[in-house]
Length: 113
Length: 112
Image 1 (spheres, chains in turn yellow, red):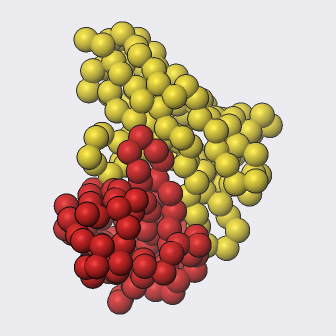
Image 2: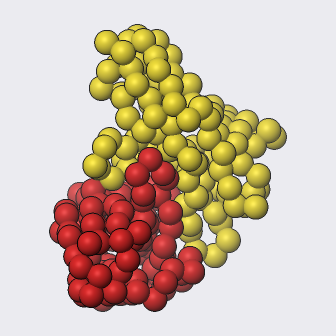
Image 3: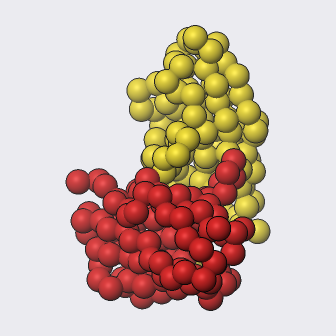
């Protein structure tokens, strides 16, 4: 089944705290897992991405943790800032023929000043 | 240049109108996508073009007609839309071996 489940639906974090967003999938034909950040009225912007042969990837304050056996991956935002307040989507790319990105349901993050 | 440019940014059209959305990228990407996004929902895939050929149509109604004139351009022709088609229409592109998909800023479409 081509579906990506994302939680929580919304998240409120104090400035300087850690924001954690989780995603899970069932289709083993996914080969690439990007995270997108979207501000209101804008298109999604690629934040960070990981392949399933890597367990963790860090870029600045953003870290993806990947658990292939559990088919789960998560985004950690360290030292969260008010400017991080946005909607975050995890996604997974299928490998069957043409590339196709399946999105999670999204997490609305609000970082309090 | 990692930019996908969409025009227009906003579009209001009547149910009997014909209009087109345009998307352009100059990153040499050979896959281009149209997504539809309703408020507070994730983007939903509509069409995928690979090497200028339509490879995926996610059972989209025929009132939406995609076109890929060349490797840099992607159009979405709109005809006889319904008010429920009002949404943010997103274009994206990717190069297979690099895997990243880049999105444009979208066209906010309102059907009246």
